Amino acid sequence: MNRREISTVALGTLLSVCGSGPFYVAPAFLGELQRSLGLSLGQLGMISGAENLGIALACMLTSWRLGQVDRRVIFMAAMVCVGGNALIAFATDFYQVLAIRALTGFFGEGPLYAMGYLILGSARSPDRAFGIGIGVVVICAAIVFEAAGSPLLPFGPAAVLVPYAGFAVILAMISALTRYTLPVVAPTGEESASGVRFRVLAALMSIILWSAAAAAFWAFTDTASATLHVDQAAIAHALSVALLVGLVGMVVPVLLGDRLGRAIPLGLATAGLIVSCFLFLGGGDWVQLAIALSIQQFSWNVAVVYQLAGVASIDAGGRYSAYGAVAQIGGMAAGPVIAGAALGLHGYATLPFVVMALGLAAFTLFVLPAPSGSRNTRLKADEA
Image (cartoon, rainbow, N blue to C red; front, side, top):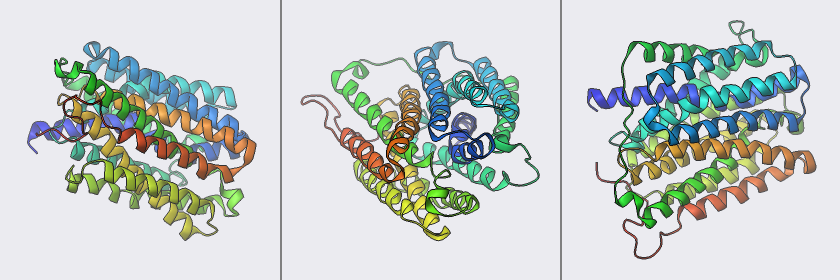
């Protein structure tokens, strides 16, 4: 990669860490909220869903108004993340937590999330760029998981969020000291064709459903400790190990690119997600939990890179990548809400079936052919 490509991937990665990083540590955050404030599973689902819904709405607004987005927007959104991630340490009830996380998602994480994916999608090789960017997000989350219980972060439920306030400070400083133009390109005539629109909508809906399936599983892994008859520390270590092991999933698209297409890797990732959920709820020791969560993270990392790269490949300028962020976070907002309602009614035994239904629907949409007669009907990467 040349210097321009390196700076593009680096900035997109930092934006992604600040915008999407807190989601990856949500299990520890929600679990600590349950223990310290006595919140119900339904309330935890509402907190996670409200934050992610705010992010989704902000991503959509950012995508619509890309021409007005510049480094000043990055600076203001970063400062909101600084305040929101730090203020959570002083929240004392459900409504305060709900308000802080919803506002942080809408005014802070959402714009950064969309801009991060826009910039990563504009790279010459989006598969590689997304693999690197999301890989760094996962590495940071694994480090935060392990550091959250140390005396260095005595902030209760906010222990896993305070480091992201630090990342946001770095981003704010960079945006204030440097000049960077977002790589937005004008739509071409081909981008307006019905076949391309169909491909975009099908791919985005696939991302929504797959993200909902993965988030439905991920958000409640920590709270399942009592049901599985293991202590919370065992799941916390399993989560951190899974994040690191799951990084191998980022290597797959970096090495293979689209040589196998994108349908085959996504199909295998969907099967892995479903199997890992059944394996997790059948676990009774730390090793099985770690294996199950590692499969889940590996599958998620493979799926998210190929899905986002598939959307980015439709437009070489990366315009649709911002909508990929909208779809992903929209699904992650819906997943915990759906799972929270199902778990509240029927318990954890229903979780694998929720994941299965969402995952299979997502894969089906991803492999749908474009209408006959349209050009470039397969979701394959464009030549660099």
